Amino acid sequence: MTPHHTFPVALGAAALLSGPALAQDGPGPKPSVEERLDALEAENVELRERLDIVSEELERTEQPDLFPAVGQSQHGLGPAASKVYEQSHGLSIGGYGEGFFSSYSGGKDSTADFLRGVIYTGYKFSDSWLFNSELEVEHASTSESGSVSLEFAYLDYLHADDLNARFGLVLLPMGFINEMHEPTTFLSVNRPETERRIIPSTWRENGAGVFGDAGGFSYRAYVVNGLDADGFAADGLRGGRQKGSKAKANDLAVTARLDWTNTPGMLAGASAYYGNSGQDRAGYGSVGTTIVDLHFQYEYQGWWFRALGALSMLDGTEELNAAKGLTGTDVIGDELLGYYGEVGYDLMTSISPESEKSLIPYVRYEHINTQDSVAVGMASPATDETIVTFGVAFQPIDEVIFKTSFEDFDRGPDRFSLGLGYVF
Image (cartoon, rainbow, N blue to C red; front, side, top):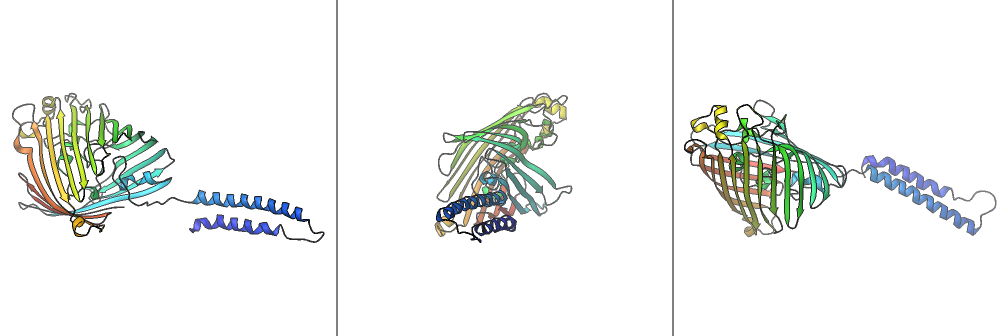
């Protein structure tokens, strides 16, 4: 029994002990049997009322578990980010972190980086309303190379399984990594380039929308502030994210996702984004921006399969490149393409089927071109890249993972990485 329960319990005990004293015999004539029975019945009623008061006080002071166990992913979020949905009421806390060591070919310096530490804070106000947030420290500091930022912070109104509403700083529901980026949810040390440069993960914007599950499908759809084309570059769209910080909202966008989730171990679906990105900047034009992806994942008897293809299409890039003064290999493409396929197998399913550990060697083939098509002239080969990744992911327990990756780039320096990650 926790200390904050001592006072109400002591009050209840004192109340209970004081009751029988009222029934003691005093001087004078002894009451009849009927009078004694009436007195006992009245005393029982009073005791029940006092017990109810003590019980209500205990319930009022009882606090939910601030650190519920990591469970299942919900509404597209990672398992640790989903903890608030398991709370009956009150506060929940979770988080994750990951650190890397990377060595490069070609004489580039090796690096060691505790890339991110994250705290999730959620609060369940009632059965219908909750708040959820992710606060991230990058590169272990807030110095020139590090930062502290909100990755998401939103309110949910939970109406029914098939229709709910979300308001705030939201993760766009695209690809695998953008919503579910906890290190235990993917095998490699580094995130796929397709989900960094074509889908600019981690990507969040201010907005509102709906989500739910119905007929074997899950869906999410939002209206958000659009990207800012001033940040677009030859190597991708990441610089166009506004991250919820004083975001220009002259141009809005819509995004939606639909997944089939009714087959055990399988996730298959598509997502899309459309909106203008010019944000009324002089000379930029509208810069209509469309991003679509198809994705598939299947886990079966130790096997892991994941595949994703993404295409970004920009309108008016000739005007945009002219306004930004970009020429030659520096131009922003009007089509950006990326895709990858990944396969792994958990050796522990054969070595020790009863073990809670997993040991998954994997391989991933990826191709990306952020200038697959350009408005003027021939597409530059400078950003046409094929990457083959080999590695092993080991989980001694579900909440901890150690990873290795060797990435063979056909143009850039190769990279060998060691990583660790945790969720709680």
